Image (cartoon, rainbow, N blue to C red; front, side):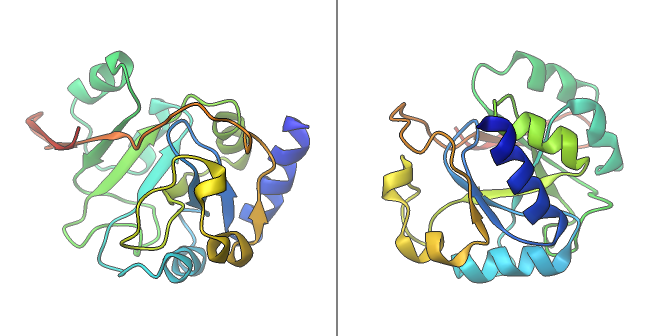
Length: 188
């Protein structure tokens, strides 16, 4: 079942579509982070202002250098030793859709360790957008059943995995990391 769901989601991502999927944190809305048209679809589904940044997911930290111009060495330690899912905001993003990159040139990247996301991203070979599965301004859904039907009906594919999971999850910790290695927490 998991393999079939990965294959179905992979086809949607490759065709520029939008998926609703479980992550290592909360349920997310995602697409190809290098495809500006797909990113526009995500923003429209969420009714989210384009100037609000989006997070991208990667399966391994070795791929970060493809999407960030300069990565401080401490970033690898922070990611490796984080006890909870950690999104690191890096300056000087590159090779991503312009509407994924923040106005200041930064991007938030999270390395996922998840039964669905990790193999999906490995097979897709590109980062995927991950934004909470809620309409902009509404609370993030803790469980699949909390997701607004409008979102479920608007995405191109709803992943049939972990929909019954009642393990309480929360959004990732977000840390901004400067090229010099200084960091500050945006969300704990």
